[in-house]
Image (tube, rainbow, N blue to C red):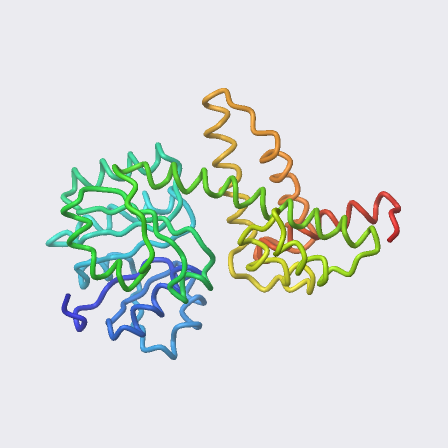
Length: 295
């Protein structure tokens, strides 16, 4: 890979900014684009160049990383990218429904766009540190062509097979992760209602059979009510709704995930859509207050 040849980054939210910063740190030129120009501000000091349109990125870059909100935004971008000559290689890190990513990949194939599905499991902070995990799917030769870029973006990655498998795997992982997060929040509030010190309880829980990595990433933030975003809770809810929709299409009830989605909606009403997903604890704290509980 010629590191002077720029890589495009379409979508400069939390994840896109983290991935851009990894490329810049590795000495790779980056041309970024986001429909919200205000998102450029966080990267202005890094040396990232910014384009006015997605088509400008496609015209100048042979590899483009897509890190937008959802599958609908990916679909809207592809025609502009496909018009570039020659068509670039696209690495899609956006979490999509399996049906969406299949349609996106079919369009890419018709448009002669080399395409890699690579949603990332982890927060933007973990992505920035290189400790998040990319779930990579697609043609083995195309993945090999993208390997040097993927090495920089996400050193930890798992190949999960054909296009669509990465989205399926990501949604199933997110189901477990989100329910673990809600269980942690509920456990902390319950422990405090019993009169336990929250920090002492969290330290004990980390050494117990109940341990999960979410205790490390979200526990202290829940205790401190630090909801500065590492991932936006609105996006967490978006993924929960994707999970529930996919399950409903298969006639599969997910009662824990449905309850957790309601907590996310309540937390968004209390803390706003751009707060961190750790804010789910506020929905439980609010319910405790409504019930008149003391502790």
